[in-house]
Amino acid sequence: MIHQIAAGEVIERPSSVLKELIENALDAGASKIQIRAKEGGLKELCVEDDGSGMTDADLSLAFESHATSKLSQMDDFRKLASFGFRGEALASVGSVADVVIETSSLISTTGLRLRNSFGRLGEIEKIDKRMGTKIRVNHLFDRLPARLKFMKSVRAEALALQQMLRRYAVTHPKVSWTYTNEDSDRVLQFSPTTFFNRGLEVLEARDASQWFLVDESQGTWKVEILALHPKHRGSVSRGFYLYLNDRPLKDVKMEMATRRGFEGFTEFPREITAIVRISGDPEDYDVNVHPMKLEVRFQNPDEVFSLIVRAIRKTLDVAHYPEVKSSDTESVEAPRLSSSPSVYTSAAPSAVPLGVPRSAFFPGATSVQEAPSLSLGNSPMFSRASSFEYLMSLDQTFLVCRRNEDLYLFDQHALHERILYERLLLNFEKGERIASQRLLFPIPLLFQNAGALIDREAEFLKLGFEIRVWNDQKAQLVSAPAFLKREPQKAIEALIESWEKGVEAISRQSLATLACHSAVRAHDVLARQEIDRLLLDFESEDSLGHCPHGRPTFVRLQIRDLEKMFHRIL
Image (cartoon, rainbow, N blue to C red; front, side, top):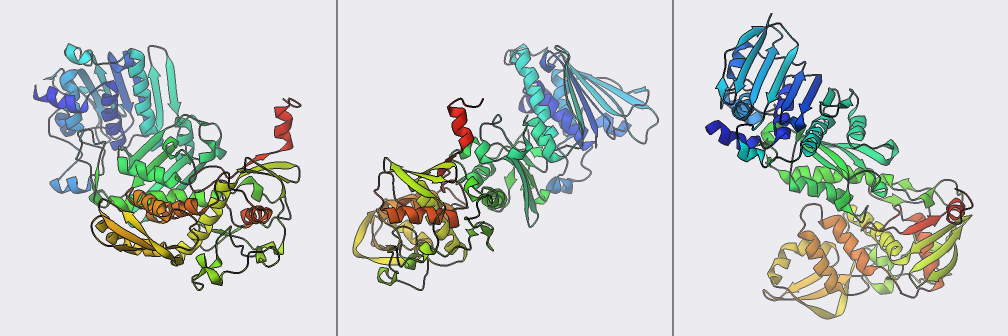
């Protein structure tokens, strides 16, 4: 009865059994793992490996509860590197199925066999020597009809077995895997390869150019991430795999970190496809907080959180050049990386963004009166012309332009927002405070807990806001960023909301919020000079084809696209 209760915690269905057997094989150093299943693993599930096998002493403990051959002393719990405890899992499986183990250790001259049939343990028998271990699990839950009622269809259980295999195959690319479904004679195979190739195989991706692989380290932690470029979202089925030292993991915070890394590069950060491998010292986390070891407790989760975000953004920051920056146009100077991997600069003269005084980006100038004239003749940005030919505006929202034989449609708000964001990010990463402007009349602010604003005073000041707190519910906005065009109180509310998201939200999300509230909006009427300034700023500043929130800044239509639309070509 005790074993059956324990089995209920770790053995929910055939795929749970497979998980335990795969982990045992990997812990034994297997380079080849073969799996066979009948009736979704309920009638028979067999896992055979070429690992180090078990000795007589190991096998005698295999079906004992609270016993294991993987730990030699209690101190090993603090630095657990294996997947689990062989005896604990097999004791549970043996109580609810007919289990036979055949094994040979590297140092033995004969093989060994041991059977546990629904809790009735047999004697160890000698057999011919074999390589590794073979475990057959038959008639799972046959004597527990109440458990059988909760099993899904044979097809569903078979698919769950395949998914479990794929989950471990991802992070063990050097291992050869074979899965045979004896009900349909279907065989799933993975040959030894690289992590990148194995990941594409498991995710059934066909075009490797749509994916990126990045790694980042800090202290004892390292992350390796294989992910689909955001612009190819939807080209494969969505999937998210998370691992800690190659152990499958469920962790809401680390999944949120991965999505946070994609924020600003896609409108749909919840629809990412990625494989995240976290590696670290076992002493820095605890795996014994979940019966199936699917969850862990990190000593310093924020450190790992930041590492994941930084690794993803390091690649996306430099990988998303829009097509408009292609080198085939001589009139557009190619952007180059600045000292910060997150910012692009150009050899073009510095341009003043729409409606923004130069003081907003140059802290030496502190007032609007010090900003240079924005007239066409005096602005340095017009020292060279844009390569775009402006044609018209649609609904005072979309700018229709031409460059060579291509047609471009720009979203004026998303485009301006992106340009402002790039400028803000450049200053922020230099550690410079955003220039502020004192308001003629302070703006009253009402919060349920205005006193909490004091805790964020330094962040507000760095972003150009000065707030005076009077009591727990009342405060006043005294100064605002010089470039902020409208509704500063709403910008403050958006900032507070973004900060509640946690680590990594303050810098980029805050700047994106400020840029959004400062940019021209849809249906704003722009003068021709302002449109020309936007287009030139786009060429020299906008390194990404989307706004900080992930929406596209432009759509490009080539002649070939138009020919397809009009069925001139197929």
